[in-house]
Image (cartoon, rainbow, N blue to C red; front, side, top):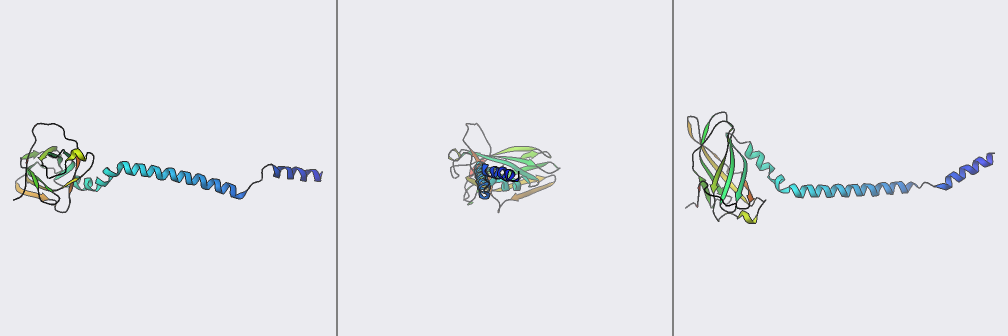
Length: 191
């Protein structure tokens, strides 16, 4: 009987010998496939969001300004920049001037219309540009133009206050030109 038990044991071992290296190599193959898929997914996500991700430091800076913050900036063709400006103060204020200057300072564009903002109010400010800036029809979805910003405003009885972004440039998202009538401001070159 003892001999038969030993034979049964030997038969069980012959059916499928376990090789230690086999499970480790299968594990490594599966792990490598999972890592490749993860890397591919990360690459796809990064390339799709690269444009907007690179603008997030700008957005957080410009949207945190007081008493006037800038939420969004778009440029159409080579003719107009539209800026979404919000009064973040608890008091009414009047924006007296909005100036964009090209990054090299060679050209500036002005909207000198007085625009009154109630507390929390958001308004669109249009500034005409000219051919000295990159034409957005060729750069749709990108940010080829960046501007220095000067904002003049009056806050209650204090007049002549201003903000000047000498060390921070404001990027404008390019959109293809859309036929429109009107707009605000005028473009000029410093003399």
